[in-house]
Image (cartoon, rainbow, N blue to C red):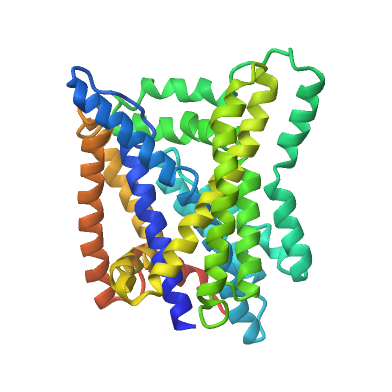
Length: 385
């Protein structure tokens, strides 16, 4: 059990660090390319951007979602062993997470915590089902049913013209407050215009179904003891690595070369969402299996265990990096979006990772949980069952 908990912390920390890298190169959702950069730097920035997006975009959040469902199982299972029902307590816990998400959204409109808090409530009734039903629910959600309905409709009317996604309208308005707005103008914009943009974008890209699918799969994996090394071990995770990589290759190249050649936007748009979500999830399992195998290898264990402190303080790190990042890049702060291409943004991200890593190590030598984790825990258990 100890190994299992350690690897979960390390995986969660790895996902958080990957998210930090992406957030920085995106200037925390304000995409801007500095002017007058030398040609070699433009080429390097483009290569680095594509490489980091290939590695982590859609994968880090997917891993985070899977571990969210697994953590729900652990907490629920521990309470059930004491003869207590965790359902109402978890609902209260999600309300608290939603509040944390609103605070985070004030700094960074791309916040995922509010979405997790709402979708997490579905785990309460799903947890009452048997393992087979839970796995089927995860699979049905994973196939992106609404996108398939849109695709079937488009196949019958391929010439139908589509308007731009609604989220684009709201993303376009970010330039009214992020580059030159005051702090309070930015907060207001993030919580109104920005929140609408992100909620619509997640809907348009099938993220709600995918996130909930991974929540449910994490719950199922907890029940099946998938992450307990003594039960599954190297053979199991090597199989996961081979299968997920074999699934990823045709999905990735099919999406890159076949779907892009389709002339009908009505067909291409839902198909791209379906294949991209499948491709990203497959590669997420490549990263997940590789990490677990290396984590349990003596030569790499100490190196990868570095991420454990990040994982134990994932809520604190997620919100702290939003506060620091928006202050660094947005107009109310240092306005570094004007000067930092991908290479320099990665440098800033690595500096942030370094100092947050030091902070996590220091904090956890004196406290059982991170600062925001402590608040979340204490408020969760404010009253007894």
